[in-house]
Length: 497
Ligand SMILES: Nc1ncnc2c1ncn2[C@@H]1O[C@H](COP(=O)(O)OP(=O)(O)OP(=O)(O)O)[C@@H](O)[C@H]1O
Ligand SMILES: [Mg+2]
Image (cartoon, rainbow, N blue to C red; front, side):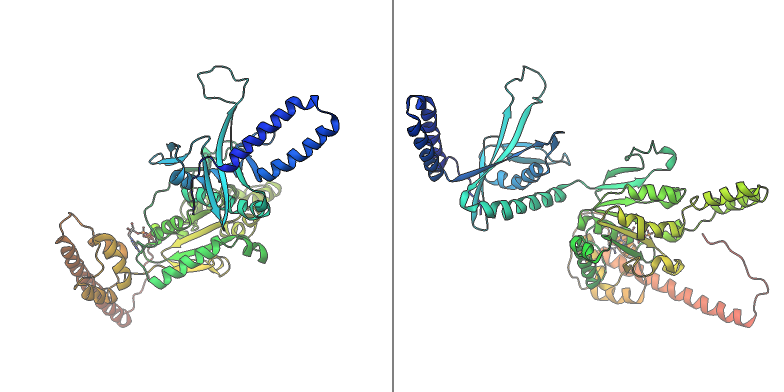
C-alpha cells in the first residue's frame, strides 16, 4: 500500500516557482504598475498550475494554553508503523512499558500513504525559535509539527474522509498500546483532600496473562460472551440512541476455582480496559462508595468480588448498630432525628450500590462494565440480580471435557491423546473444578514423557474424587434415613463462615 518517496518532481517545480517569485519581488519596483499586476496574477495562476499541492500543518501544541494537540498525538501514532516500515531515517525511544523500543520517522523525513487509492505525503518537522540562547537543557521553544501534503483535486476527500480515518486509527492504536492498570480502593482515612484523585485508588500495572483462548469453558458460551463484549464496546451510538447509559453488568457465579476471576482478567485483556477491584468491606458508607465510583475512568471494568460477603453487614457493623441503637434510646428527639438522617448515608447498602449503578453513575460517564462475582447465587438479593441491572448472568461451572481440552492445550501443549476419552468420561461423572484439573496438569520438568504422567495423575485424582463423592452421598442418605427415624429434639445453631 505504502511507498516511501524522496524528492519529487513537483517539489522541484515548486522551488523553481519560488525562485521566480523571489526575482519578481526584487525587481517589480522597476516595472510599470499595470505590468506588475499582470505578472502577479499570471504568476499565481502559473504557480497553482505547476504546484497543485495543498499543505496542512498539525502543531504539537495548540491554543492559548498550549495544550498538547490530540490530532498531533493521533497522527504520531498513525504514522508510527508506516514510518518504521518505510522511512529511511528513524528515531527510536522506549515504549510506554519501557521494555521495548518504538521507532518513528526522523525530522525532515517524509513518508507517503495511500488510502482508498488517494496518495498523500506526511513529513515530520521541527523548528527552533531564533531567540533561543545557549543552554544545557533541552530546547523549550522547540516546535514540532507534521505537514500533510496532498493534491488539490483530493481536497474534499482528505478533509472529509481521510483525516477522520487517521484520527480514528491513531486513537485506536494508542488504546491498543496503552499500558493498563489494576486499581484497588484505599481506605478513606488515607484519602487526601477532595481534589486529590489519585489517593482514593492505588494502582499497579495490569499484566494478567489470562485470555479467552486460555480460559477453559464451553466454547459456545465463550463465543457468546466475546460477542456480547464486542457489541457493548462498539455500542456508543446505540446506547445514545436508546437513551441508556453506556454500561453493562455481568454476574459471574459458580463454585471456588471455576475461573470467575480469570474470566474478569480475560475480559479486561480482550477489551483492553483497566480494572477497578472494589473492596466493599473497606468502604464505610454510600457517600464514600459514590466518591470512589465517580473517580473510575472510562473503558474500565469495576469488579466487586464475593458480593454476597461484601454486602453482608455482619460482625462489627452489626455490633455497632446494636450499640448505636442503645445510645439513641437515651437521646433527645431533635438529636435523634439528626442521627437518623445521618444514618441514611452511614453504611454501604444494597440500595446505595444499586442507585449508583442505575442512576447517578449513568449520568457521569460511559463505557464501564461492572462485574459481580459470587459463589452462592441463591444467597443474593433478587433486587441485585434482576435483569436490566445485571445484564448477563454467567455460570462458571465444573470442568467438563471441552474445558479440559483447553487446559490440556495450555498446560501440556497437546491437542489430543488416547487418555482424553477416559478423562472426558470421568469429568462428566465427577465435579472437579478447572483449578483442580489445572493443578494436576502442571509440568514439573521439560520431559516429553511427563505429559502422559500428568494425564495419568489426573485420572487417579478424578477416580479418587469420584469415590469420595460417592461415599459422601452414601453417608448423606444414611443420615437422612436416621433423621427420619429419630428426629432430634434441639436444632443445632451453627455459624456460617
Ligand atoms: N475456567 C478456567 N480456565 C482456565 N484456568 C482456570 C479456570 N478456572 C480456574 N482456573 C485456574 O485456577 C486458578 C483459580 O481460578 P480463579 O481464581 O479464576 O477462580 P474463582 O472462580 O475466581 O475462585 P473464587 O471463587 O475462589 O474466587 C486460576 O489461577 C486459573 O489458573
Ligand atoms: Mg475469584
